[in-house]
Length: 192
Image 1: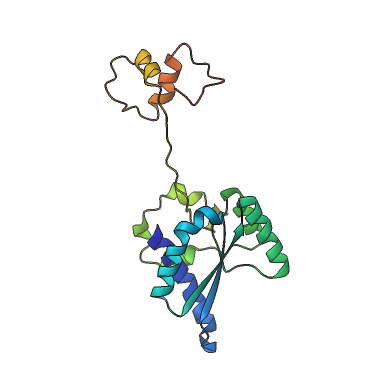
Image 2: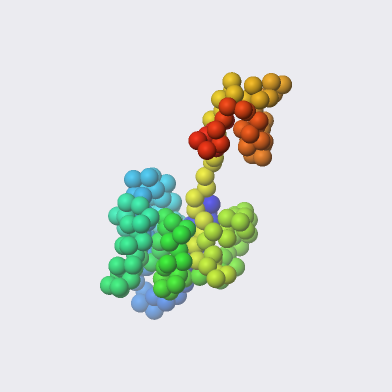
C-alpha cells in the first residue's frame, strides 16, 4: 500500500507539474491529515522517501486535526476561505460523501487507470467500494484493521470438549457462543 500511496501522489503531482511546468518553480504539495500523533509516524518516512525520489516536489504536511470530525470541519472551513490542501488523508469514510457533494474531492479513476502499479496493489473491490461515491473512486482505502478475538478457553472447552486447537472460523464463533447455555446474548454477544 505504501508503493500505491506514493504512486498515486506521483500521479497527482505529475498532473500538477504539467500545469506549473511553464513557471519552472518547484511544486509544493500541501497534505492535510488527521491523527498527527499516530499517523505522522508512518506518513513522514513515506513523504521523505517520495521527496528524495522526486526532488522537484516538496510536500508540506498540515497535520493539525486531532480526529476525523475535526478534519472534516477544517476542510469545510478551508473550502470557504479557498485554502484547501492539495491532498487529504485520514478522512473517515462517512465524511467522504459530504466533501464529494461539494466538489471538494477529485475522482481518482483516471489516475488509477493510468498507474501501472495499481492493479498489482491488490486492493479488493470491497475495500475500494468504501471510498466510492456515485460510481467514482474519490479516495483510496488506507486503513486495514486486524480483528482480535479473546477466547475464554474454559468456556470453549465446555462447548467443544474435543477441540484441540483454536481453529474456529468466523462463522464458528457465534455458533459456539449460542451453544453455551450461560452466555447472555444481550450482554455478551461479542465474547465467548
